[in-house]
Length: 182
Image (cartoon, rainbow, N blue to C red; front, top):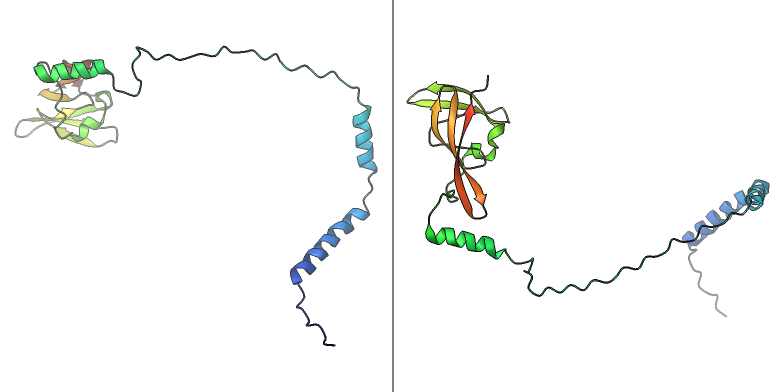
């Protein structure tokens, strides 16, 4: 008879057996009397009444009938009609959205400060932005978020003509000024 081939020992199973047996060794010398005392204390407490669950209120189902209502996922037709009417007639004021925006149009007008004027080939105004940068502007430049075009510069203020939305699809001109900051 031939001897059976010898297998290599599986070291992983040996390590796991050793770890498991070492974990059980720590359980043998513990005194469970404190655990028994805790359980006895809990069982000795007086029993209390459990509050009943709150009553469930039934909600009437609502059936949505969209007949005659506008689809919320389509653009509002009234705004489209107003814009189309303004575009076809061509009357009224509207901003030039094809014009390239100037740097100071990124700031609201109330965040800009006029800090002075310079006279060189005409009069220039000095505007300080929120980021503490000073910009030089002249008549014809734009300021603020409402398409404000500079129409006049004097020593103590800048006069602007803004184009603001009046109603959906309609615009109006509004004159405003930016005074010299003291």
